[in-house]
Picture: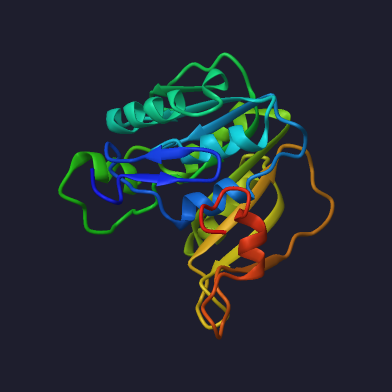
Amino acid sequence: MTKYASFHFKEFSVSQEKCAMKIGTDAILLGAWAQAEIEPVHILDVGCGSGLISLMMAQRYLSSTVTAIDIDAGAYHQSLENFENSPWNNRLKVFQCDVLTYQFSTTFDLIVSNPPYFDDALKADTKERNLARHTDSLKLHQLMRKVSELLSIDGTFCLIYPIDALENILQLAKENQLYIKDIRAVQHNENKEAKRVLIRFQQSIVTTPYSIIPFYIREKESNNYSNEYISLTKNFHPFL
């Protein structure tokens, strides 16, 4: 096991040696930022990878059942192991399945997804890494349509995605009656352009116009973590 095979968060640990995609800032940000409009009973993590975001949801919402799904066998087995070793193993379950075809028995009050997003980039040398990184198995329009079917009437959907796709995301949201509650443009610091966007959607109509608010991970001068990042992740991040 390499030094990158396991990460220790404040209340749980995550092994990742079976996963094609390793833990990164995107997953930590989404897990820390994703919140429901109502106290969720059922939570769904689409494309769970190591199960990190599911574990963060289980830590935050102590009365919720969290369902994690991933099409990749390695991710399934990794999440299963991490869930079994967590303090919340009785509220976490994982399935190896395709979100587009799996027959769910319930709707969900909160859906989170850090999905594959590469369309035309050079493919990796393994099938597992391609599944995790590329949209071949899950296109954005398919994800948005499926989410609109799976959300409860008061449900919330939280997504992280490259900001270059924002215009397309907004159009797909409109087509699927998903209303935008909050958008954050994620930047390394004030000197860097935004690379990712965090978006919170809901099923019920939002009457207040949204604005795109910047979120800085690091301070401009010192390159230390920003106060906003520390405040967001301090309940999870092992170094804060």
